[in-house]
Length: 289
Image (tube, rainbow, N blue to C red; front, side, top):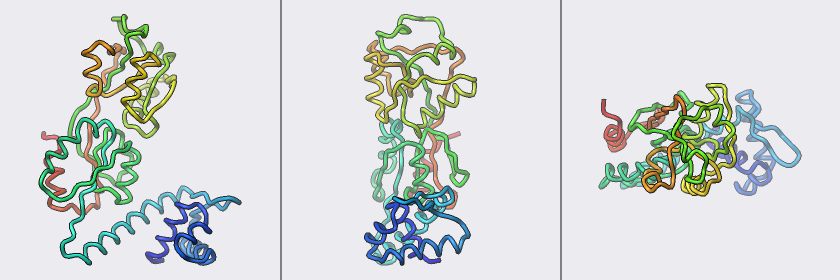
């Protein structure tokens, strides 16, 4: 097994077809097929299920893909570093949508005047995937981090609230509602993989209830407009809707026993080689105790 095997595997996983991967790699299809078979025999695993029209990566194949990408990315960094004495690897940071809108300015101000900085905005799941594959140096997320290969450090507290528009029946209601009542209300919520969604769904399901999800959306600003126009209610970070609450366009729904706070976290791989600037950035952003 060598680096070429990994590059072929990554291309096959992306294309889902041996023939297409072979074309992109300027190789013959038999050579690509043999490379995949060599990997499967070497590790005694099945990386792909072979179907008539395409390949489907197995669960162990998905794990292999994460590590293959990490190794090839490190090799690319090594090549660029060794071939240029002036090369400086940009720090690559992934932030979730909520943090991207309300915390990114602090990151940029903290890092001002140092090396190059690249920022990716996506949901918690995607950022975790890219950290594991070494495609990001640092993540800042509000969601639940699942991998034990990642180090998590708190940087800021946040509060989730349930809100409705002024045309909703709960807008004039001052008393609390229960989870039993909530489960019949149409909910507008973020897409799967969103930290906000994961935390709230877990909170509700842990208490034996379910949610009636009317529609889901990856754009929080669209969700806010949907709630204002009475297409449903939503759970959201309080910092997102301060203006709408002050203007009376939205109102906080009092949900019985609901006081859900969360933490924005810095996340990075436990095996990450931290540069001086990256280490300083982590220390400056970490929550002071």
